[in-house]
Image 1: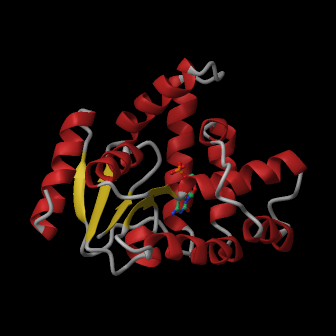
Image 2: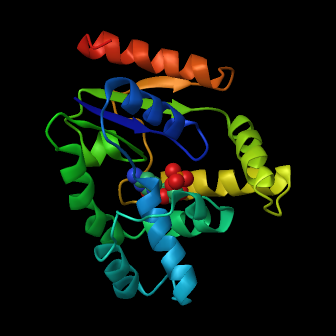
Length: 209
Ligand code: DC
């Protein structure tokens, strides 16, 4: 069974994806980490984001094993990820890796922006997780300030709105709800309720409980 979870920044899609993967004992790939790793490398090497061949080469040589999820979850790396993710050559370089993860025997859970539309359009279950920008910014602010990042509620909201705009308006695989995806708007739901809703969707689509 392939489960595709898409949604904007800080929507809680990762939480839902991890919970479904644990529940159904499926491997899970947070595809945002791939773009974050490329973005972090661009920053670390001081490359120009407009140097497409150099940025695409970084994407093509990315090793998934050993990605440090914690170190990649900072605000500046999220912004860099969104910038490299708008480059078609970067997306192309990361497609095969994601498709082969999705296609492994027994299936997998993947979360990102284009899983249900581009990476695994054949997925049995597609869920689009979202919430208002204000609700998502409040969650992201709590997370980043707890880690000691120098942010304000307003700077985090501005950043979320900017990333939504870039991720949704790019021409290569923009963030969009697949026609056959089921929506979870968790603006007024806590984590447990979002996960319960996702489990109901899987059960309804596939019979798996
Ligand atoms: O989900 P996230 O915040 O970790 O993602 C970081 C950026 O990577 C996001 O702004 C857009 C991009 N991304 C993408 O374009 N496609 C994906 N499948 C996953 C992430």
